[in-house]
Length: 154
Length: 130
View 1 (cartoon, chains in turn orange, brown):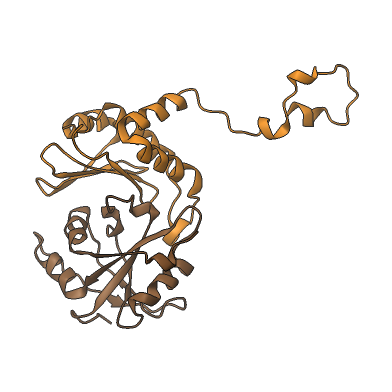
View 2: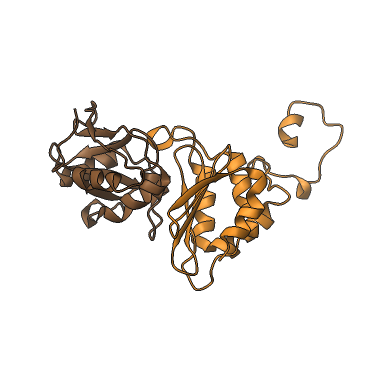
């Protein structure tokens, strides 16, 4: 960026060559302060496949994908991270699956210790969950995320 | 016009709804779910159709085609408490004359009953991309 701004101006000083940054490097998106911690969290809880899919959904699904799908909602993603931080998945079962929903939500599916399906979808406005054991579905507010994650932990 | 209960319909499943292990229930959650009629376009021709108009590479790739008979779909809806009267309506489109829709709202609970009833067709080897 600095290199571009200084072009065409009289050079009051010259940046040492070893300190200069090529424009293509400075254009790379800087990581958020907690982004590395979040990436590690995903790898630990969801495994490489889950981590890769979240990365893919965040970066490559623009608004209008599929049948007029919405881009992943930042609020939904934030709620998803907060949930994943607290929830415990059974160690002896397959890693949870991650899906992108048409309304820009992110969906987590896994099997609890009894082998019954548990699903949670995080949207821009709240959380929708389903437990196959009781065939019950419900809605939760973002404020209740911690409680929900403890409740669904196997 | 509602389709006869003996007709079979298919739905494209792309990368966003299939991770190689599980099928996303959100594939059937919502209203006006798009399907396609095998009575109009045979399964073999749906691969090309979906690859041309549904998948959107590189991010969204066609992974499989899910098939169900209209009558089976209706009996799953009827078995819910309270029962849901599902229909499939023909809604031909320019890109797909076989296009049809399920106009009723399908909840996550109902979608979870539909998923196990789907017959899954995986991409034939000659359709795989290099």
